[in-house]
Structure formats: structure tokens, C-alpha cells
Length: 398
Image (tube, rainbow, N blue to C red; front, side, top):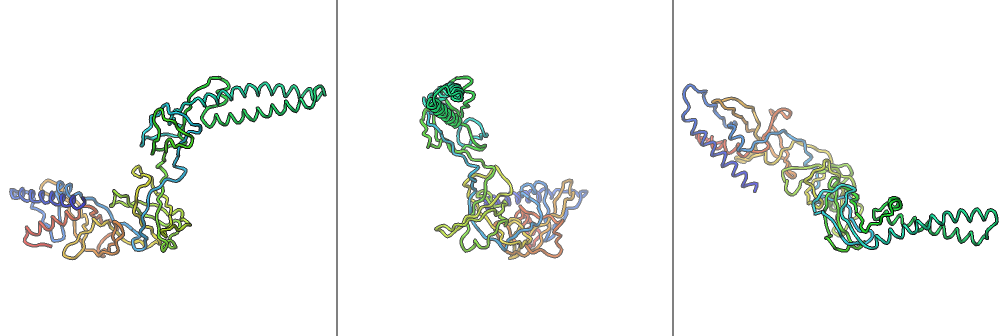
């Protein structure tokens, strides 16, 4: 697809070039003379500039020679992944969630109903009522015991009953809390509900839905899975022979499957201590920036920089080859010709060094100003095509 796109851009640019040449044949003698292109210079009209897809940039500093190539995936840490179960089994009465839905912490994910919920609330209200009675009876018997009016056996029996019902009420309160019912509100209103609401423990996106209306969910059944994609990490697979070179704090450069021309950054955070049956170790990397395009389980290709040895580098698309040599194009500025703005570019020869991923080391001529010269990062082959066409028209080529 990349080759087809590049070929289409060159064909479109060539069409504009020939069109421009035909239009220039009618230029009157009073117009400004046409700017001549040298063997190393090329000019573009605004239309040609747009068709060529020109993008400008500068030399980057990259660590290309001392890296380890690895594969990996984007993973979710345990605290960012939630499996939602029914603490007490019930039938699904209501839910509106679908995979991909955004949900906030504390938001209702499903409504369940079951007779057991009614019985649990009833048991609590009855036990709470008994506790109120036994509290009063315990206080009365204690007073009588202090005055030696009642027997010790009666006081002991009352004390045991009071402590037993108190423990039962406390246990029932905890059970109610597990299914999202406030014991205090139930005690005050005495209104029993046959349904309960289940809430999301984290904010994130619904990744799995295993429910439907009327389905009975056991406590062991996972009803939903919620994933928070804001804190993904890179889980890299490093071979045993390379693990000794990996240190915490080293830089990681990685690309996504659909973005071979864009590198993203991470940092080595943890190094696994177990070598599995495939003789590899898992290395955990923290991402520099979060991105909505990241998904758990996404495959990545990565480079771990094992030491700091930076070089001048450019994307591969910025370098063209002609006559067995390698060149880049420098933007020389804009000027007005024939009442339109022309963009000038100069082709300079460079030497290529090591290539890692989408970047290549470049050795630049002494005349190149690394701080000010702008380089054509995309569209370089379109410029080369125009130069060759211009050279053929002039009777010579580069």
C-alpha cells in the first residue's frame, strides 16, 4: 500500500509538472523570466507541493547502534482490570452495557433480583428487632445481678443470647453491604426490595459482557469485565541471552502494527525474575504518554536502548537513492515567480549508517547546519522524480 501511494503521488506530481510546462509556453516577454533549476535544485508550485505531500522537519538524535530488538504487547496492570461477579446469585433484570461502552466508577452495571435478597433483608430486620429487646433485657438483668436479686444462671443466659444476636446482626450488616444495601437505611425505612444494584469498582471501558435479561448468574460467574486503558504498560519478551544487558530506566522505542512510520516511547520499569520454557523473560515498561489508540493485547515491535550512544538520524522516507548514492532535500525557502509562490529545495549527498526500525543514521556534509536547515521528511521521492523529468527536458539528468 505504501508503494502504491508513493507511485500515485509521483504520477500526480508528474502530471502537474507537464501541465505547468505547457502553460509556460504562452508566457509574454513582460513577465518575470522563469527561475532555472540547477542539477541540485528543484522548485515546486503550491499545487505540486500539496500533491507531493511535503513534510518538513529537522535532524533527530537517536540511539540506533546499541539497541535490542524485541516484541511485546500492551497489557493492563491488575489494578486497572476488574471482573464483576454477583456476590449472591440472582437473575438479570436490567442492564444496558455493551462491549466498548465507557463507564465510570460507582455507575450501575446491572440490576439483579432473587428471593434470597428478600430473605436476607427480612432476617436482618428480625434480628435487629431482637437485638433491641435483648439489649434492654441484658441491661435489666445486669442491674438485678448487681443487687443479687436474680440468679447468676439467668444473667449468663441473657448475656449469651445478647452477644449471639449482636454478632448475627453485625454479620447480616456485612452481607447487606456486599450486595450494596445500606443496613442503616433499611432499618430506618423497613422497606424491603427484591432487587439489588451492582456497581462498577473502576472507571474504564466494558471489554466483556456475559449476561442477558433473565439469565441466572452464580457468584462464580463473571458478568462483566471493565478495563481502564489509561494506565497500560508494555510487556516485552526478552531472550535469555540479552536479559543481562537490560537495566531499569533504559529507554524503549516501539511502534504499533498500523503505524510503522511512527515511534512511541516508554521506559524499562521492572525486569522479570523467571525464565520460562521458551527461555525468555518478561520486561515491564511504563509508557511516556497515554493514547486512545492503545488497546490491551495490542502487538508491538520495540527497541530497548541498552546505552546512550546517540547519532544524527532521519526517517527512511527522507532519504532517496540515485546513481548508487544517497541524498536528502533541504528546504531553501519560498519566492514569488509569475505571481505565485514557489518553494525551492536543494538535494545534498549524505552517507548512511546503521538502520534500526524506521530511522537511519546519516553522516552529513560540513556545510549542513543542523540547527537551522529544514529537511524534507516526506515527499523526497516526488522531488527526485521532478528533478529527473526536468533533467530530461533540459537534455541531461542528474
